[in-house]
Amino acid sequence: MSKKWSIAALVLYVVYAVGMYFYIFHGASGGVPATLKGTVADPQTFMTERELYLSDDYSKIRNFLFFVITPFEWLVYFLILFTGLSRVLENWADTRWKLLKNGAYVFLLYLFTTIIFYPIDIYRYTLSKEYGISTQDFSSWMRDYVIDFWINFGTTLLVVLVLYWLIQKSAKKWWLYAWLLTIPFAIFMMYLQPVVIDPLYNEFTPLKDKELEAKILSLADRADIPSDHVFEVDMSEKTNALNAYVTGIGDNSRIVLWDTTLNNLTDEEILFIMAHEMGHYVEKHIYIGIASYLLSILVGLWLISKIMPWMVSKFGRVLNIEKVSDIRSLPLFFVLVSFLLFVSNPISNAISRYQETRSDEYAMELTGDAEAAVSTFQNLAKAGLSEVNPPWLVKIFRYTHPPMLERINTIARYTDKNEVETETETETETDKETETETDKEIETE
Ligand SMILES: [Zn+2]
Image 1: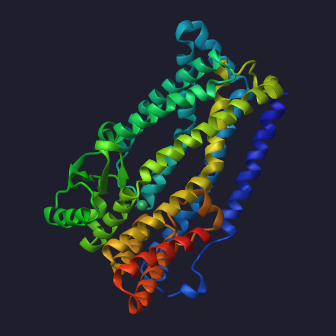
Image 2: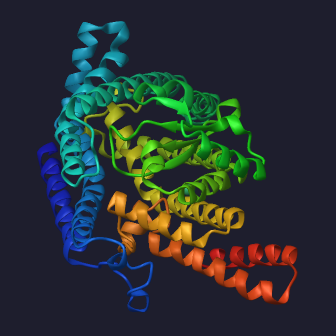
Image 3: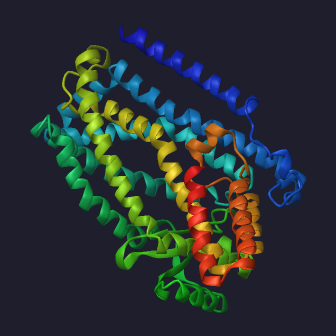
């Protein structure tokens, strides 16, 4: 019986992967619409022949990996259940480490799946290196990989032990208690992230270029952002990609610029990026992020608390699970979490893209420098070999930022409007008008 299910799962996965292969490599491709050919949004105008070729190739492979790897994880977890391996691991943990059984089980499962997924991680690293994105040597990559392993294992262990303890205590309400515990835990982790976790991987320092720092600080001053919250990080040993981000909460909240960004862009472009990040900061996107994250955990835990007992009562024999509270049901828990995360991607990405557009507008508001905006986006696309207009499924599942074509459109729309309206109205009124009109447009998009 279990064998039949294993084969069915395998076949289903292969059919899905083949379908995805055709969609990504031979199906819908975004490309540049005819009306925009030859404009600043057309990669033909700012990428070399070789970059165009690489970006097309690289994007397709990465898109394909994105769509097949997560379902592959589900397949692996289901096979661990169908084949009875999960039960074997549990028995093993039980006979050797009785009292620490659950912890030992988590370690064995974690180690096993890490080994299974390791070749995929190596492949991703090699790919990124081959296409000239990653500049990290293998030993440094491996060092990060080991740090990742222990941090993720530690967090998983803590979460799983508490979770299964709660499930044992209260089969009905565990999801609510688990969620209540998540709130302080998540906030605490957010607070520690920039000062404890991130420095394990890279070195963070105040800006080294003092002239640029002065320009950034005067920009920060105009946006009412405390000046000691801007940092740079040494990413150039690891990647050629460009980036900047806002992280942390409370005293630890900060804007971080990758040194690749500082080294490769002009001051005007860096200031545009800073203004964009300040948009996130000023509009408190990180707090909105935490709130929606906590809300989605609540919904997710509740759904799992309904789905898991149902699956165990219906398919318990095939899954080799008798009770939800048995630690051997953990692979099923992982599948459900991963599945819910995967299918909620379009929602969280849509929210994120909306915030990114807001920040782009904020940056235009603050700098008014459309030229720097456009060349920044072009440089980001070049450095990351990213697609300027990806296929629809790719956009809704993968893009946390609007594709470059849309970002340039936002800038064009902004400048057009500003020009038209300054002719007829006074300056302060213009500002307000533009803001509300752009708002409406985004909402109806
Ligand atoms: Zn952003």
